[in-house]
Image (cartoon, rainbow, N blue to C red):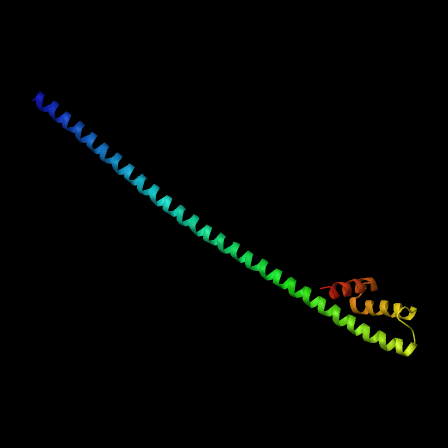
Length: 139
């Protein structure tokens, strides 16, 4: 009987150890699976963030390109307006000179130029119009 009792105690200890090992294996397996799932979720999240970030960067590049294109078109449009304004001013000056009888270096021409410059460019001076015309003429 005593031997049987020791045998039963030894078997119960072994069963407890096997159960503990199984539990540890299950725990470690679960931890490994959770770690893999967590890693996969992080990778997917990071991948989604990277693709969103890349899309945002591409959108910024497109916006910059369109802004440069707009700025170039604006410069061309402004140059055309200055050119048209200058041509209108030149025609007006020729008519004015014919009516007043002043030559190219006359005082009336300079006053007219300043007045036309104010009309064409708001509060800008005639010097601005002349500089714009010179820039246009040499381009």
